[in-house]
Length: 143
Image (cartoon, rainbow, N blue to C red; front, side, top):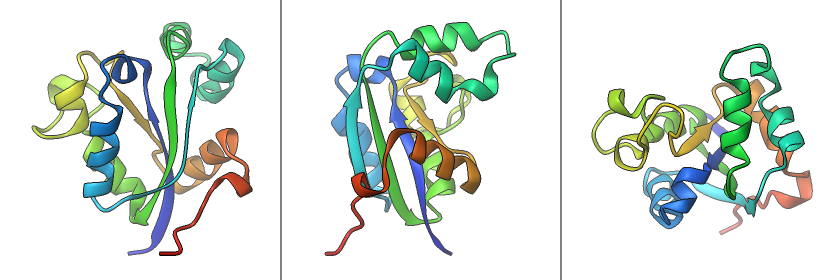
């Protein structure tokens, strides 16, 4: 398997529940390394730009509203097969369908407030990381 990077966002619902550390710990215990991390309260322009791909979908405005409702924690995760591993650790988008022990099964309540976001493909990960982080903000592990 190849070393990849993926974007992860801990969404406002999970930040409000004060489970940021628990979620980051799940990623680390799952074999992923945090190589960039910041907390931000997204503006409507930032959230709208990030979710631009969904602009024509009926849930877009609610998604932007939710993602601006409180702070988020944005991170870059790195590791072997990081994109698939992140998605496995997150669980299904709908927490009701998420496997036991996944982040969404344990920390999310609805499909709309589902605790975390993760990139779905290498091209998406590259674009999403660049949306939030400059190259000099990503710190490869040297030890």
